[in-house]
Length: 350
Image 1 (cartoon, rainbow, N blue to C red):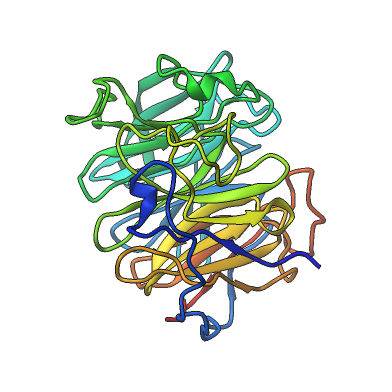
Image 2: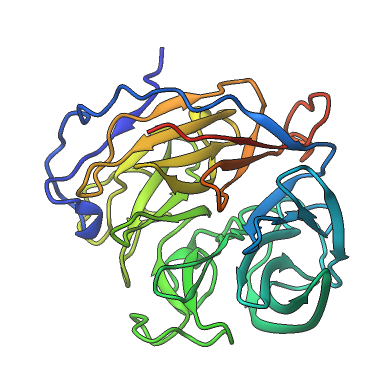
């Protein structure tokens, strides 16, 4: 039987240093209480991909394949704000990431010839003033990335995939296979390592971003055949794809802090809450809890809800501290349950 987890701990949180590092046993912080019972928030959705919360507690939710942007209240009221013009769903592409800053909404979507990031103004339920702030992100039937999130530094981060062409991940002039960091106008953020949008590179397909209280940035990444990953991201670092999958011995590349077998994870959305990372698993059909020590090193991952809801893609922390999780059983790869796709909420354990 395969091990349910593989942990790579480095002597000094070595995701912040390339290669090498002592392999340590799992943290003693491995016994985790179960989270609260899940409660449905909304049902009968179609591949909810991204979740971003408004100040009043409502969530903006994207549907990948329909191109709809929804407003969902904690009580379960669902309203369509807009069907986003220009979205061209194709394979793993479509309407994906969403982020909110002040009166603006940012969306990541697949268009005719590329993936792009577009800024809108939101007034009440009215979405207006679409402005393309980044275009030319490679698109493909697979590996489109798509996550958007504002960091504690106030800048917008975006994840991109290498669309099945691994060479793009190592090409610093390509926007594919990267984590990007930008201003709200789409300009490279001050301090970016190459004076471009590129913040880190050598990625296959990152779909989860989260920060801990110390400001460390974590990313969840799909492997190919052997290892899915969680990495700690530092500016200018190379995470090895396609030369390395999982942990390697090449000091040019940063090792992941945690890996799973691909049938146990296929990690997508990720959030930080109550001392842990919470990661939705698609192929693995479970919610992973990854406790973090004070130095950012992971303890033993704990699987919750295994097989109960099917494929889990979207994970976000609501203003009241609950986790919202979205299923992805209507994406052509899952087995739909009655009421799918759904958003459900639970109280994260400590």
